[in-house]
Image: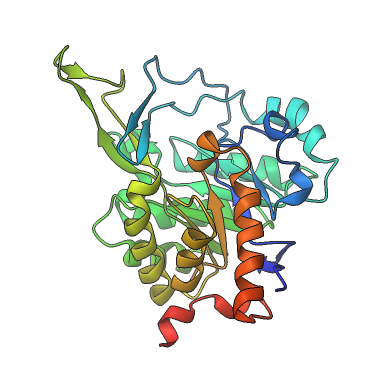
Length: 303
């Protein structure tokens, strides 16, 4: 099966990439998963200025998943460009940077910075960040705010803009339509769900931040449903994610409408999970006589 695919003008050798925040900046996994074998490489989320992240505890295991409240720990966009990006430029794998900000204008500044940066193929916009001008409300909480962020980024860059949608909304279809109308080129579906865990002996929340993002196999049915709804709501390519551990999981997302998929939490358990998904997709194509992985995209909608 031909595994090549295209997302917003990006030609990928296969439809599999690591989810932001689960693969570091590339070198951390080089001995196990060379970047040249991935469809794309999505780096850990970046902000304009360095952030230390939240105090520990910042992660906790949950049934079929995990909660994390890392708090966007990162060296800042300029340090990434100076110290991390030179390594990634050695490969012909598209690099997608994940943008995070607390004000609409900051998203535009980040987009402009990376628009002028060689070696960055596309921007993934995390709209689940708290908006300081709206009392900490996430930009994704209201389609109008999500559209404002998208439009700001779109105006600041010529590179493909991929907006990462949150499931913590009333209607993810409405959110998808809003950012599509504002200029998004593609959509990542989904970000983590908000959850929490309580230590019953201490009678206190486990995470220092109280709540965190739930990821892993526990959220996969929610994520597949979201991809299904977004595929019907907005005519944009989708990167599906949320609990993918093997090729069968990835195929659920592709059949629901995803053009590509991202593997996240599974990488912490099996660092070569991305490669196993790629191999499994190829085997599925051979077993079922499918010529191109693109022929499977949205096939479940066609009966």
